[in-house]
Image (cartoon, rainbow, N blue to C red; front, top):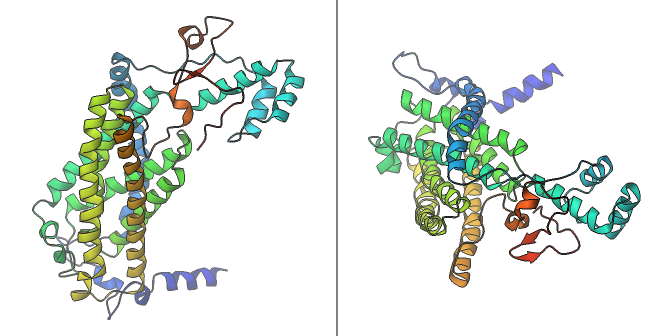
Length: 387
């Protein structure tokens, strides 16, 4: 078994797999203390940076964002729900599915509740799993903070770097390209942030685009690791700033939406659209993909693994096109309905538009009012809110 693992490791880290024309891992070893070439082990710290960012996020949200959000009128949803072990077990067993007539009859026998009482219990139980606007505001405020700071820092670091203005400089002199401290910290924090995002996907609320986001984060992390250990850091930094340029505008638009500032939301959203289209549909394919698919061959002989790198870059572009489709749907909604009523790329579900009267919200009345969605009483059968 040990021999097989060593053989697999030798194949994985073989020079022929990663490089071409005699380039080897030894070319990425510096004997000059003033010259630094990337090492895989240095990026292992990013995992711990991810946990550190989780802690910073908690402090930032709890002690800064939440007080501000509450002062602006946001509050946690307080759903009055009497605990019931039998119904809870059934809820967990059918989670993500519509409540059937058979399920209702079974619940009635177990609890001696009426059909309407069973329906209402399941409705309110599902509502408890839907994040409040305060929760969403907190989440988006953290993303807005990080993406804006990361983009500004990235542009500050790259502004005087020649490859920002001429992408052929990504390859000139490779692999002997010194990595400065500012680039190292840029990579380390960005990779740590994607670890943080990956962690939160599994304990935060369920997203409609969970798999798209998980795929995006994993591909981005693989690209960061790959570009780091092969010293394709220059093109890697371009990928990072292009992605960071628009995301904080989307986060800001969502925050305005949760505060019911519709006009501000739409202004921020259309700023986001302009930057998104410019960065994701122009700069990324026609500058970054162009240099990795075409310009590179004038300066570097690429190995087999480089095509995996290019494949992952292309998958990111496919995701960009997919999300652009969602954005276009929102634009069409604005044109046809006059307002942006739904978020894109978020965990928004059909139950987000549900409102209760004050007696139901505060659990002060034993006979709560009927739940209403957009002014219409909820139908008799419980709707499935999971996308």
